[in-house]
Length: 143
Image (cartoon, rainbow, N blue to C red; front, side, top):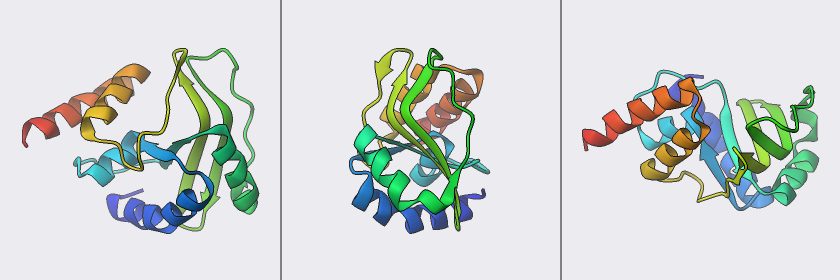
């Protein structure tokens, strides 16, 4: 999705996230784009919420649920309730009760600060996350 597409998706789903998934936070490329980091695209909108919020969204967004193979329960990234939805505006991944490398990742507001996004990207630690962290740091350095 282009930054423009992502903004449309965010504006469409944010009220429903507030209604069904609160508290929630965006992470990943979508969050960075919404912060203003110059990225060309995001594959989807990544949302972290609690298990209860993820369950409420399963009911509210059931028609948009995309069937998924279960993820390995012992991987470095584990959600107690993970779902991918294909909404009319674009794809959204919901991570209810997300744990990254054994640490709980709690929602920190709808669009966490650049500093918090940097911490999250480093915690994930995959090459693609570290590349995003470097772009975020460069953007932060420009003021």
